[in-house]
Amino acid sequence: MRRVFTIAHTVWLEMVRRKDMYVLLVLLLTLLFVLMSLNVFGLAGMVRHVLDTGLLLTWLFGWVLAVNVSTRQLPREESQRTIYPLLAKPVSRAELLVGKWLGACTITGAALVVFYLAILLLTLLRGGRGAFNWVTAGQAFFLHFVFVAIVAAVGTMLSTRMNYDASASISYVLTLGAFLIVPRVPHLVTLETGFTRGGLLVLYYLLPHLELFDLRRRLVHDWGPANWSAILFSVAYGLLLVAACLLLAWLGYRKKRFSRSDAI
Image (tube, rainbow, N blue to C red; front, top):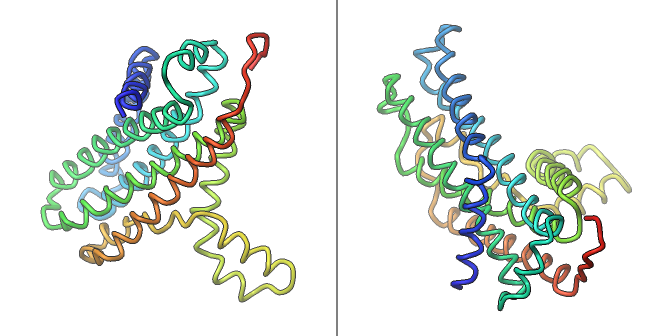
């Protein structure tokens, strides 16, 4: 496990060297600016609207960050030829994959902590002291973190066989489609027949149900904490998805051959 944590630490160091922390700062400032500018539209007193907008932007920023960081790691190592000294050390490919995933996952999770704190602080400053339940907020953040862990695992899996552009693009399409389309399949199948109906059912059972990790409505409308058994089921499902993606990543990467003459 020490080697896994060391690799994850190098991902953090890379973020600092590449000045990606400035990107996080820009995202945070954008979030704060949008929330504060709601005064312009006479929405200063609508605490729930501020909370809803902030959570939407946080989900968008977290999704983009998880995809970009996770899909960049392996292609960058291969293109810069730093993959050779990495694999020459006593580091297995499984450890390399898990370390890269863990680094991308924790970086995005740290950004989520900052985003959530900024949103909750602004909500409190707007007089929304009783606008949300703290237990619900904790559940929402925790499931959101599981969501970005899944997205990072998907990006890591795809980056084992593709370059950065291809893996990032497919990660965006796959995760966005799963988040937006899968929840609507039960309704859509009642409107379709034949091959289309069968295809929708296949998508419903094959694509991950990422909507299970979205508690924004419950938090914004103060519906109270979710049932803890449902939370535990969602976490177990998320961990299963992460494990499946990392297993597929390892199966696709364990016998991959590298050539110094390849232009990756």
